[in-house]
Image (cartoon, rainbow, N blue to C red; front, side, top):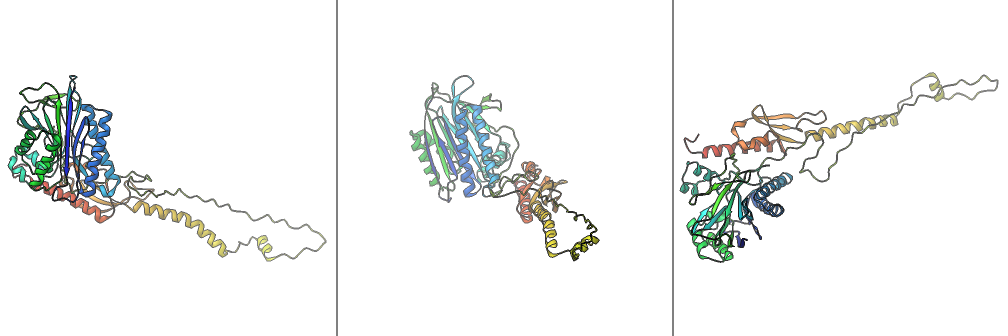
Length: 461
């Protein structure tokens, strides 16, 4: 039976106005999330990630369940960012460890990670980084394109290649840790690792025995070194685990099927699983959700909306009454009125003001309906791909009740001049509030592509 004890510390830092980090430390689940996307978006993303993770893992506390919990957290953030305009662009890192039973029947710690919030394991007298940062600079270090020293000062070191909530799906790195008595696990946001070296982190983990005091000491060190970001730390001690020995605990990567794929090297962090690289700058808003065709309301529409049903009018034409000539009688007949004479002779009824108003009313109903339909069908702009180029259209995708979308601007930006991970959403269309907003969205995508292309070292293409 494994017995754990944990400590948590978090701080806003010395340069931020709010704390977008979030931490969790329960009986068998521990997590750190670092939100991005602005004050409100970052706080919401990290909170939603941790709360969804806790609920999902409580239902299925297994290695596969931890992966599913990450997927649930990603979906929850993505869906909320599509519903609320103020939350567009939000995302978060997430690193979590859960106590469960391994495939061999023994207690293990399952560890999962997305982003650049790290996990370190102190075991067998040494501290080693388990997770691999999903950042642009670290990806280049792993591919031999720059050194660790260069990565620490690279202008794109904070650009993530993977994060929760920036797309409908996400790849998750997963490990299995057979921890021993005396081991110590550290989860932390980059507010710690950007300010405090691994050597100093190791010194605190070895010297401060109480996990709560160790977590606070690490946060204090980050602030003492500048505190340029929010900093959050969770320290988990293994009070009772497997019988300890002089060797570090075994750490294994876990595949998508849940099977370990080999022990982690003792002196180097694990390499990331192969997967598509998706650059996700924290200041770039993700595309909005494509809206359904016809009269289905968009997910982020105002609550007080209605769809008018087609109005039909039936006009019944009354035939003039039959004229029956009076019987021939000797008795004198009353004098025929003018109206009776006009009716008898078949003279059309005179058009009066009342008749005109009635006709106008009948015509106004369908005309008003057409005007409403036209307004609804054209009161929308969206960005789409047109023969390999990004274009801005006005109208509803696919048309609405006969009103086809209108091409307003076929830009010179092609699909090869935007980041690959943006294309799936672009091909489903991206709704914008105006033509100008659509053009700015395309320009931002192009600038994002140029920034990453220019950041690539010479000769890497």
